[in-house]
Image (cartoon, rainbow, N blue to C red):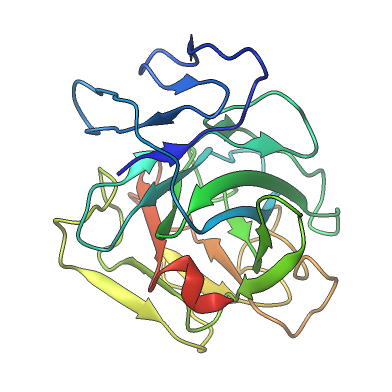
Length: 243
């Protein structure tokens, strides 16, 4: 399967990163991930959506965020380009502190995907002030922009079970934990939370709408041995099930 990257208006493929990701007008690519990324054109796919993912990245040692897509839970994921905070320049990741306090407004990333599984990736920084958070994802029609639904933070995601991993989870890993509705604070993995994380100087104090009771999802980076670790999150079902 392929996935649509953001359109540049050039009508040509262009090298986007050292990993060989391409972008272009209505171009599609397939990635074999990990080693030797390869690409081939694919026809347009039905059921395409625009997603908006709110994020909060407050802390001196915020790490690196990226996103991915897979056609199903049993197929390889592909790294995606996205637009950050209204920018018109596609990127595949960003690193470092983006918000200046726990009270600062959330940012957002926009991306285009066909129906499938959404992945969220995070590599932690050097210490506990690297709690990165995401919130409810908005799903819109790719053509009209009309809202179709949301991917809530509760009962919609699964995370890597083991804490402190040294690579991202993929379709071959069996150790996934379904994230229901209970708040947790497990070091070295993704958690549901509201009203601030357990560490000072990092994380949001509310969700993206300003609520201190509605839950967001965050990466807990406290604890010995959890610096520079890999956090993987993916939707529990196809995007179309949330609309």
